[in-house]
Image 1: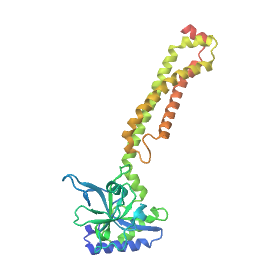
Image 2: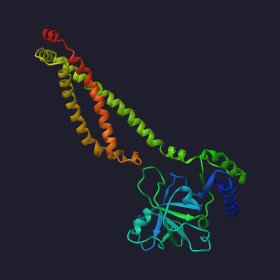
Image 3: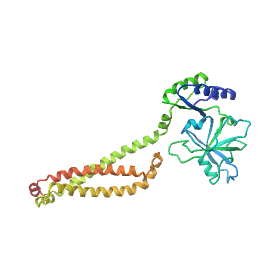
Image 4: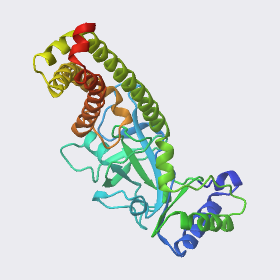
Length: 341
């Protein structure tokens, strides 16, 4: 993040600085493309006051919110955002030409679900004139992972000046290899301009996932504790049941039952209880899992593979908890069991 405005740069100086950095970085080895944008990925904030031509505002509180991002250069190619219809900004979009904008699929579908958004007009907060939509881009995440689709409007830097911009750089190889050289180049172009810490895409993604990771870690710890307690409890119940049925087990073995028969009997009774609990747990877990859907990215809260995996783990742990007392029961001496029972 660079902010020439804070360093006292005027409009002309700021534009010259952006242009100088663009030319220098573009010539660096390992750089595939670059662009400027007013927002850091996953750290944008919506603004209120978007107006759509033909839409009547119902009340003063009827404010349309949108993400507003000013861009310059090959932003969509660098950021990996596909242009679905229309065109991207070009050198013909200048201060003296028709004001233009690009919108994302969410905004286009909200207001023109049955027609093309190209050629329609919108007005941004604080502006007096209308902007013509020239392109529609694919939806992305603007404020955090897992967010519901949000409206987003892109404006060309040539028509929406900003004295604070973020430099996006797409590298040909490991992005860490160009991180320091790019910082040095920016400092050389503007020694008095302070820069925020440079980060790779991976680091930005990890930072945005920090809270979710902490939540998942805590849930995992609590889940393991719950699984341990449940296993100990199950073991205690089965062991108590076997102890109470020592005479019955001894009698069965005296009448011809083998150790394998006794082992299977205890395991069947214990696992029947476990299976009932797993089925009941699945019935309750599926609707409750929706509460955790905000912490899952690229995965459905009722993902069958995850649910099945959890059920299998529970059954395996329960099987071990049942097996230990069942194994002891299969080794009971019938004469001792009948005498002590």
